[in-house]
Amino acid sequence: MKKLLQLFSLSTMVSISGVASILLISSASVSYADHGEITNSQTTLTPSQVRLENDAKSKGYSSYAAMKADREKDYGSKDAKYFESIRNAQKKLETEEKKQEEEKREVDAKKAGYKSYAEMQANIRKKADDKKKAENKKIAEKRKAEVLKKADKKKVADKIKADEKKVADKIKKEKRQSAIIKARIYSQNNPGFRDLKPGIHYDDYIKNCSNNKCYGIQNISFSALSRYKNGNKVLGTLTLDMGPIASGGILIDFINEFNDPDANIFRKMKTNFDTKYILDYQFSERDRQLFNEREKSELLVVYSKGQVALRIERDFSLYIEYRDISEARAFLKRNKPVTATLDDF
Image 1 (cartoon, helix red, strand yellow):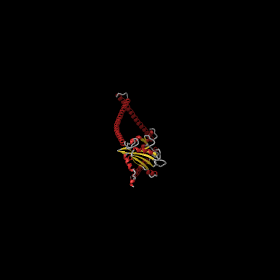
Image 2: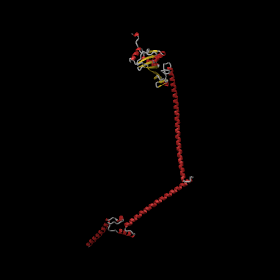
Image 3: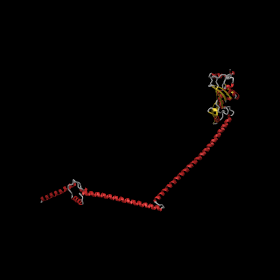
Image 4: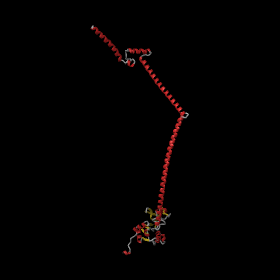
């Protein structure tokens, strides 16, 4: 009995072992349940696989895998058609909604008194453009008004400034004219050449002289030194260049040089001035000799307390000088010779 039980157990284990071997072979190949297809490595079909294969062949397929692939292809095509139908339906719906919207706009436009929606839109755009133009025009007019206001304000300010300048210029001109008249009155008794008297306003000098020429005279060269008196520019010293008076480069005795005294410009001027002005001093014969020896730089004959002078310089030219009273005093103080008399010996 015990032997029988052992034989039964052994046969049972062998049977179970055989089933396990079959299952092991199936699991070692690619899983059919997972993939639904049979591979070349699979050598044994399970009952369920057999059923699937038979079902596929009954439907005209070579294998279950072929049937499955065909079904997947068909499903993909169906999905594409489905989504395409959805898109078409959506497009159709949008078209309908757009058409309804356009129809509504047309109805609303006609209710508003327009022939069409396009006409209403054109009118709306025109109103917007007109409004914009009106606003721009208003802005432009406002700017123009501001510019005109600013211009008017500037014009008023410029006029006030011009009027003030005109008044100031008038006052200045009157003051200047008054100064000119006062200078003429002050200088009327001063010695000079015609109206060119030291002490006159410098404007009077400029009026008669230009470029060292006065009154159009060609043989005399004029020069002037100005000074300021009470804030006004006046003529201080007037100098006339009378030209050379030399004879052979030496100043000889003026008394015996020519039989005709008028042939010498110095003699002519001295004779004239001796009758018109009071002589202050003149150079001596000794001074003349020293001048010829180049030990003196100039020779002077002075009249009217220094206001008039005849001056001979080293170039042997004669100069006539006219001075204002204050200038004359300083000139006389600088140049009047201090000499010894016989009583000093």
